[in-house]
Image (cartoon, rainbow, N blue to C red; front, top):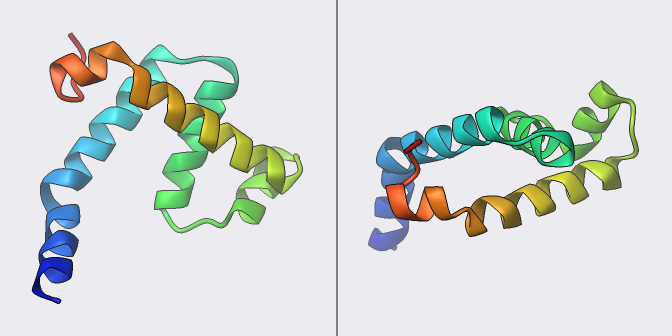
Length: 89
């Protein structure tokens, strides 16, 4: 139980900053579906549901899930993020 609480605290601090850096990197670097995925991830973090985001973009909600999935895969594979700890070179 103690570890779960500690993890939540970490998310609010350093991890939250890292996520913001990664998303900012994605906005500067990506275009097309990957860019839409970054925007959708930001909205998800802000509390919007997939359905809400789909309405904002005028698409089906399964599109939003696909955008997020593809973008997450791309971010994980991005060498610049891995090598530089989430910051732009």
